[in-house]
Image (cartoon, rainbow, N blue to C red):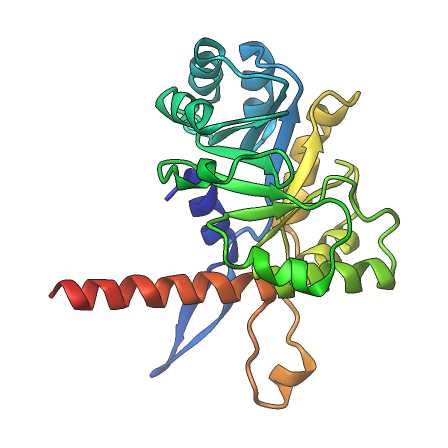
Length: 260
């Protein structure tokens, strides 16, 4: 499992709080993950992003060499570090994994399918072009940690929120979305309720890193997720991004039972 996947799991996990003889499970840990995108592998910039509060680093590079990848991973410390190259093949994936890169961001059109056979690295798929329901459902079958909507959704209208819910629900993957570091708490809450788990911040934007501490505080101040109408009526329906992780957990338990 990649560190990226582990970070997402922790953000989505329900914490159980005992109450008498019963356990109520509706409280979460910090529920959104901050990903800082940098357009070069400068160790000083990476260290600065980590110091300001980045949970995860993403390097947007045309081509990542093994040497600069190792330097980037070292600068990130315990923080997961990923690469978003223009093109990557199986050999590139193996080299980057050996250098300590935790995950790769891939485009569906140019990435050779055998790249996904590398099991020691996590994957985020870029969603571009026409996103039909059938197209999104096939994404669920791929070994991905998350999906990225690089163009964002523009103003956070009800229509935009509906589209995010559609993508998260059909792919059954957590969504990574570019946002401004000055995003409001109300907007953060709406994104979280729509299946967004990862906030992508452009670290090269003026003042972006300086705004990270305030963004972290806004995330930590978010109220517990709202109960949906169906939940209030008695049918507990999980969030779109929770479904996939629940299913994966059940599969892992079944495998353990088979081993016994």
